[in-house]
Length: 241
Ligand code: IPE
Ligand code: IPE
Ligand code: MG
Image 1 (cartoon, helix red, strand yellow):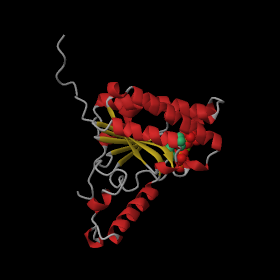
Image 2 (cartoon, rainbow, N blue to C red; image 1 turned 135 degrees about the vertical axis):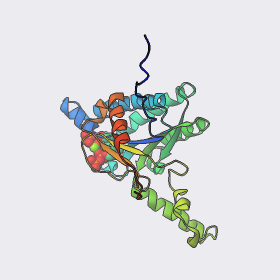
Image 3 (tube, rainbow, N blue to C red; image 1 turned 90 degrees about the vertical axis):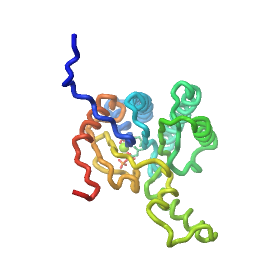
């Protein structure tokens, strides 16, 4: 049978998608489970979405995994999240050649345990030749990122290695965790919350936000397709007409 040639071809996905992986706790509560069970289910959702992004041809996927504010949670919950991250990174290191994903970490990793930092470092070093990139935001805060960039630039000026008057948006960007990564065209936040919670404050200047009423552990390829469709319906003007 001939394939109808009016079959609409899917438009190319955004080059960079960012996701605020929110709603794990509520997902667990709805099932009478401990919050850590929600985080485990959230880690599964991440695995599926990362694979799906690869098949779609998305070049950069940035995920908010742990914020600078998330330390306020119980020690038990924080330890549970860190344990899941460690297990995920070990698995990623094992499957590195198969998946060919480049790992990057945005955030102040100095507050993580030495074991976790070592895994982050190994994942980053061993994957640097690959080109589909996953940026993990760990102990990440948009404000913290901007402050550390300003601090590093000021240190260069003080050392006589940079000129304050020569600072441009482009130069400033090179001090951010996201140096060299194009801004996300699309930022998705599941869980029903309508806020950024300190995510990618600089980089989101012209990002399209899609907020969805689904909890992160229930988020799958279908939900991502819907977010991308919504993104394609937007008219991006960047201040022009
Ligand atoms: C997101 O899910 C995961 C992290 C913030 C680490 P939450 O744990 O915030 O889930 P809710 O918002 O309480 O449902
Ligand atoms: C944002 O979610 C952080 C992550 C998903 C890692 P939060 O659950 O921490 O955000 P708030 O507290 O609802 O704003
Ligand atoms: Mg939350």
